[in-house]
Length: 271
Length: 271
Figure 1: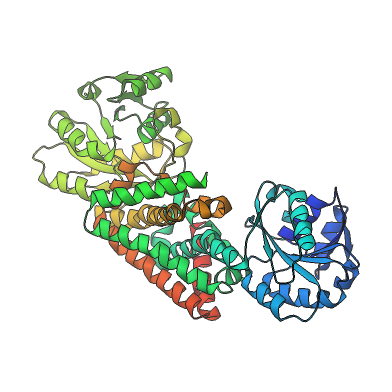
Figure 2: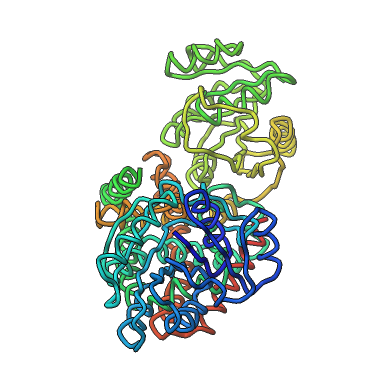
């Protein structure tokens, strides 16, 4: 297939590198340095979004704030192209699909993969290999478009799960927003305490705060664009923290053990 | 010096391996397999605690529940030996030193180092190299005993900081108990949700829950033996979580940004 990729950052770049052996891939980025880096890796890069068309598939892999404008710009001219987007929160895309007058087909394809590094220079097909890809229909997805999204996800190395936008957003509130919220709360507590505690912090604390380094825009997308689900997920976790605090305050060894046993079961589920 | 080490687990074994090039080291463990493993590495291992004496220094590196009984057994027979212990909570040791009638000198020497693996077979001098060692006086520490503790810590590869038992316990409530509480709360939340969410969990979530695998006895020591400081530390972190939840619920971008900026400052302090 002719696949255009809008946004050659970590995810878009990794998709481009993973898909090029089986497909005719062209990439676009607003940043000349990203285009040059992609060209340096032997990818075809264009300097106008519209130059990705005509295509069979366009994957929108821009930062969150640019996803809807990019879909809006592409939709009227999409022709037969299926528009996929990797947005990590589906609510806003779902609403856009309902409200848009254009006929272009839209499907979400969210690779559950990431790392702290950013940009095309960190792109790596290995980032996607074996990872879950959530394929999320909109009101503008037909069976053919869903099949195309599944094929692209598998060709990129992903393992496909189809779910609704609301299921997707409940899942990512738990898998992405909760660890981010914990890491931010721990790291902000360390900041408040300053230099009296920092020298004694070990690998456990550092690991636990790693995702606090999530870029600001992505953190806003994960937390604010999915606020309802995130508040519900936080409430769930704070119930456990409440139990744990009560057990510690009351020196309730059995109560604490029960919570830590549940935590161990949770860890074993995570594989 | 003649150094006896009671407890040849991860920390005691690592201390033995780190100290043997400069000192005459003997180890004791109640577990024959641990003694055999130590002997296999060329260490002298004895099968009775008392056989560590006479010595210049005894390091008690048993699990938390055995620290006070071991100190009580050694104290009447210590002679000139300085008794060091690596207990990760100082309150109980501090109380023991005040209440004990024996004259043996007691100093805490807590290496701020750890890993999930346990036992002598995981022992490794590299675990201690460059790590902070908190040297904590008791009422039964004199200047000579403090100097001995400092020398042993440095010879084991540590970087020495002297602090009081109450400072120590406030610090570890923040550096050890908070990440453990967060990891346990996240992992228990994942357990409650079961198989609907686990397949979609990525490296961020797994890293954030890693220390939930802390062995039960160590987790009890970290959380319950230091309950007062842990409750205070949890309250501090929950204040930040409250702020974060409010910012998300009210879609307060600026408020969220302020918290995430503080978290980034915290991360940069941690080096």
